[in-house]
Image 1 (cartoon, one colour):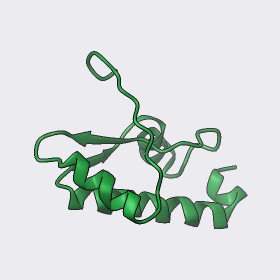
Image 2: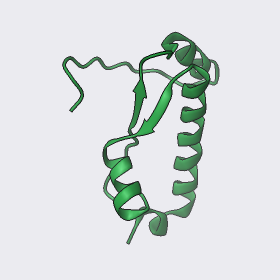
Image 3: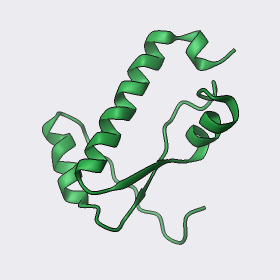
Length: 90
């Protein structure tokens, strides 16, 4: 049983949040791609993976105005937590 079969209202909310973030990233000049379990579920299951409750995007850095993105979502009431990773993506 897939996530969308378990909780259709939760799925709709998740998709709306995904669209919101993607739009804000693109407005700030980012090229945005799904990654991790989100991409795996989309390709392999044509759905979300039921036990994978987070959403991963990959953002290409060229042309991305990070501070513009952060200000735009903060203006909409979002909190921003920044994590820094070293080394190449895995």
